[in-house]
Amino acid sequence: MLEPSNLKYESFTMKLNKTLRGKIMNQQIRKKEEEILGAIAEELPPVVFRNWNRWRDVLPMSPRSVANDDCLGKGPAERVYVGRNAGYPRAAFLDYLKKRTRLSGGE
Image (cartoon, rainbow, N blue to C red):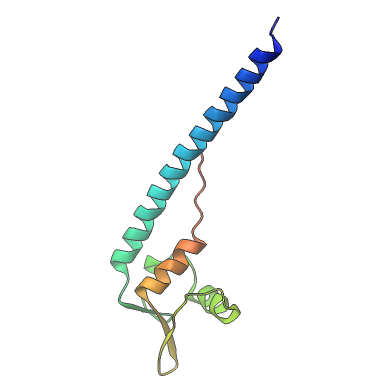
């Protein structure tokens, strides 16, 4: 028969193992996220305009979704206009993508 102190110890070690696994998974997910964003950053021009012809080849979201977020105040922090065309500096756009990126940690 198991003693109550043994149960507490086993419960504690199971929680500790789960926590450590979670931290390792989070590190792996963050590393993967950085790799993905790095690959995207290499392809982006200095200013990413919403009418950029390679948008759909490089970016995983619609330019209209970015425009909608921008209108709601949830978009990239900085905006540049050239005529009627809106664009975003690379750094601001990458920060926005980082906020919007979500990776699952499936095993």
